[in-house]
Image (cartoon, rainbow, N blue to C red; front, side, top):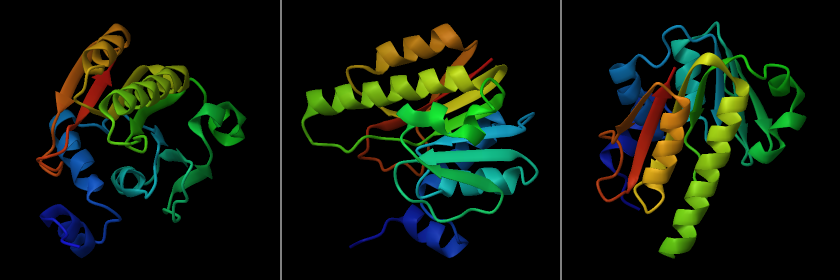
Length: 187
């Protein structure tokens, strides 16, 4: 299988996935980790974003949650669990209301049927935002992967009701053919 430039670069640079370059680019634009001491990574596997967060902020409390397995990342507490069950993950639950940054590269399995995929993406995005709002403090930041689809405007509007600043990004490391974009919010 042909590997693109970013996948090759990730392997050469020792990263787990090409996704790390997406968060790096956004971080360079918004200073994502400035004044951040607690991080929650939702949908963390394979761990590229958690790995980057740990390198940027080695003294921070970084928690990661995913249904899929994730190889250990130094200074990251990983929990294999569904985000719908996050309240049952005691170490994360005890930090409820205190996270400075919530990041999510979560995406549902895509079927190829537009209407079904759009609804699944919206459902995951909304669930992730609701968790972020519940677990974050009032001066928090939020970064989420979403997709350009029929629900994007509605989801972005939901974010705008909850953050004083909302921006969208299409990082260079995103495949040109992909409809993925990233929304960033801060208070």
